[in-house]
Length: 126
Image 1: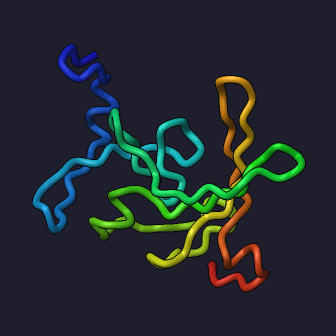
Image 2 (image 1 turned 180 degrees about the horizontal axis):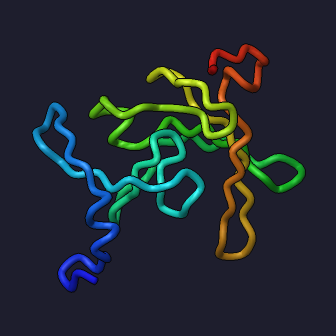
């Protein structure tokens, strides 16, 4: 365990160097579905990082529709593969994931439903 950053040697070895418009930066590789991980490109978030999303008003069932565009690394820096975790289709910068967010007391749960490709039936993956 690294005392300075609070990470194990294994997680430190998963870091990959990327270069973008603003210079060099490191991206921790996560697994889609894990907490604090971008569902679009699987980048593991550092403290204070989050996804770019648009939340719509609640429905009668007390859930909310959510459009997830991605994180800083796949929306702005580029170079990271953007794909749908449901169907595996490659996503363009204008594509987004559709999800439902359920809020119960002080916790929230996000369920990703798909992307425009798999939700409309036009599958372009594999």
